[in-house]
Amino acid sequence: MKLWTVLLMLTCEKLLRFYIVGIFQKEIGESFGSRWETTNIIVCILQINFIHKVHVEKHSLYKGEVDEEKKEYLCEKGLEKDILNGMREEAVNKVYESVIKKGDVTIDAKVESVEKVFVDQTIDKQTRGAIPESQLRITTTLMNYADTKYQYIQGCDLIIDYLWVVSPGATGNDVITLNWNSSVFSLSDYGGPLNAYNYVTNMSTGSQDFYNFISTPAHSNSAGIGWYAQLQSPNISPKIQINPGGWAFVSFEPSYMFHVNDNVVTDLRLEYVHDNMPGISSISFSYEGASISAGGNFTDSLSKITTYRSMLVDDWG
Image (cartoon, rainbow, N blue to C red; front, top):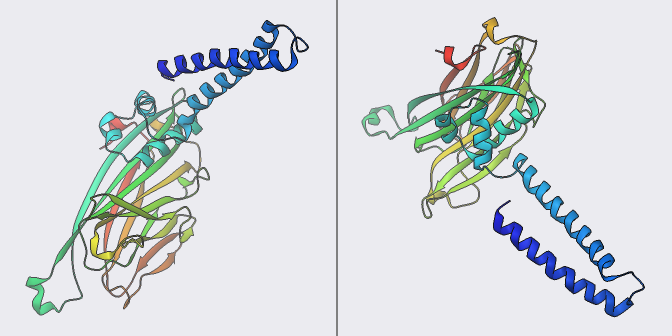
């Protein structure tokens, strides 16, 4: 709490003390006790409220907006500042919540990106030289948590950011699937199996419009989940929307106990499937053993494999 806030509250406390004492003396005289007894009662009430406000402000870090105290705390746990500064507000909050839940842990992290140029398949191949191209970028941030004392793995989080750097001509519903080795990791129950949303840039204001908030995958299996990415916001005119994108946070816990030095290596396989002809074609999900896949007649896709290693980040390749 800032110093000027404390001083203001203390000043108000004194003014209220004299005001209420005057009312008590006028209305009930000495029947309630002496001036000092009345004053002490009021001061106690004010002090309780003051302490409560300090407590609430202190613990609002657990669910409030990103602030420097959260960032400093995560840096103390091992998260590199460059990675932290590149994360969205929601990602910082979710990682902070993960650390609070897991207790005294050390964080390792790595960031990887992949891009692909998509060609609009709705135009005849004879005019391919004039076919517009779009470009999709996917960035994954993998968080690895180990308890500080014994170095046993407490879980990992995968943060997914995707952005159409060059807007696609087809802006329907795309599909994202994520698969993993269920013998190594399983979805964490804490905070839900999936947190995701979509956004577009409003050309008129330059601001981002957020929509399609997701807390449950459209399809799930023991080693995979799938959800829809909506490329068009229902909140503003399609004519002023550009650069659709999205964000997702998936949290995992170990399927068995293992140590950072056990050299556990496993892949998290992400696939983004783009519908080139919305309204004519559709993307369907299918189950392959414990995994989930998606595809359709007029689709294109971009895959991103993020390799998890139990060793500390300094040893990651």
